[in-house]
Image (tube, rainbow, N blue to C red; front, top):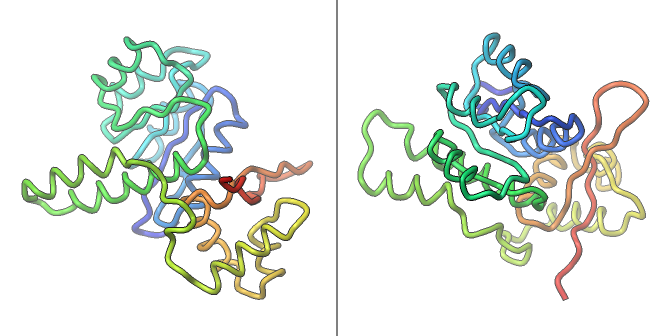
Length: 224
């Protein structure tokens, strides 16, 4: 974790979903997963032992509502949930949630919200800000949507990474992309994260028999 990384707490009752969301977070430059939790109790224990910048919180947890956690914490939160009841949405926003994403959502949707949150933090990083900064920060939390791959800045390395993924019969990890393209793993990871954020790639988790799951990447369906 870099000294300037935004630390994120991921809370979801399904550990696989929590791992998936954590994978999206860790794939984005400037973010790091501080902890994952599948219960309120585990989330509270994590908060007691570390500091976080942002929590991604599900509403339905086995030992209570995630909205209670959003009210308790003194750092930012977004709600990621299948709940679509208007009362729940209002309660989440009243509790202080900066965003509300309804499951299931595309990986790029969460990546875009996180990128907007990073901009929000940058705009409000000074001790005193202008009215224009405030307006821009609020707007950053409500992005119109991820930019299409065709709007991304042209880059030979990015195209090389994208081509390696599209030509592969199976999803590839960052290490496998690095081996296929000849770029460093860190460079591959950076371009992979950008391609996920723009919607050109999808990220999922590869579960082995032991150890932490590995992020792997596949091409998103092309628009016809």
